[in-house]
Amino acid sequence: MSDHLFPHHTNPGADSYRQKILPLRDRMTVYNGWLMNRLEEMLPGLMDETGIDLWVVIAREYNEDPVIMSLLPEPNLYARRRTILLFHRQQEGVERLAVYRYGFGDFYKGVWDPDEEEQYECLAKIIKEKDPKTIGINVSNTFAFGDGLTHGEYTLMVDALGDLSERLVPAEALCIRWLETRSKEELEAYPMLVELTHAIIQEAFSSKVITAGVTTVDDVQWWIRQKILDLGVEMWFPATVDRQGHGDSYEDNERTRVIHRGDLLHCDVGFYYLGLATDVQQNAYVLKQGETDAPQGLKDALVDANKLQDFLASAMKNKRTGNEILREALDNAWADGIKPSIYTHPLGVHGHAAGPTIGLWDQQGGVPGRGDYPLHPNTCYAIELNAKKEVPEWDNQEVKMSLEQDAWWTGEELQFMAGRQKKLHLVS
Image 1 (cartoon, one colour):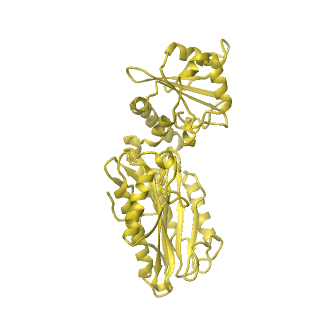
Image 2 (tube, helix red, strand yellow):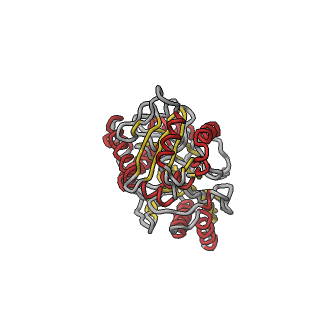
């Protein structure tokens, strides 16, 4: 496992990243370059791996397949009318076509003239000409990401294909592999996004934002949401902040309570930028008058949560399923005296993304289906978990130390992008 200390004392703040956040036009150039590279360099191998000769992705405006926006170049924001993309595996590369009125430039050649034939008639004609052995369609009973073909579109397609419909096969595996696999360029850029997430949290968990006895947890979470908007990146879930205090239960979810000195604060923050999502949870302690550090019991709880991250990282191996990884990590943590809970999820094009689910907060015995999917190289994860521990300074009250850190599975080790939190933020 590759790791370095989370630099919470040296992070220059969120606003210092403004110069790194590109204008929309420049984002389009970067994103479309990444997409073209993925289509040309990555997709052929994934189609071979999953046994799909011809992949058909069909979506309608405002009823988009979850995969299609990862396939369309910017500045497209949705499928227009009915958009049909067709990928045909050839001896050299993949032929990319759009059975669509306009086409998409160099990405997808437009092959349909609506004045000459119906859209599905055109699709059927092309598929007959290509004569593939397998025709992949996005249907799945397990993954939403592989189940984007609606019943209506499926019926129209089967009617148009006739006997060729016997060659239809689920493209579930191809959908997941396409969405979960990151390119070299994406992996090079990803740490900056995570650094920015850390910077937002560090600023939120400071005296710049928090005045003990006045500021509420609701105030802080709205400050984070506004900061994300002001920085020009897109929130993918509403940032949350909660508190635990001496005498309070961590199950108390009221978010409008005032922050007091001696409180343990926790946040959950993430955004989209350049087609990638972040998802980070960190913790802070609000110093009492005369204190210079958090109580040792809270620091020990953070140590346990870091150890749980280590146990999870050690359990990750290529081809192991999410459920196998979960079981080993939990067993080792319990044996070490940690009270663990693991609910780690893939991260990438989506926040709760395609790939193996490694536990859910309410399913610590494994997740049927999504947890049975195996780990692959060059995939990313939000290492989300918590460890519970009694704090002597709080009359042995049990606290929950929740962490979430974005990481890259290289195929050989888990690398935490931009480090991880090993010290509590301190609010003076």
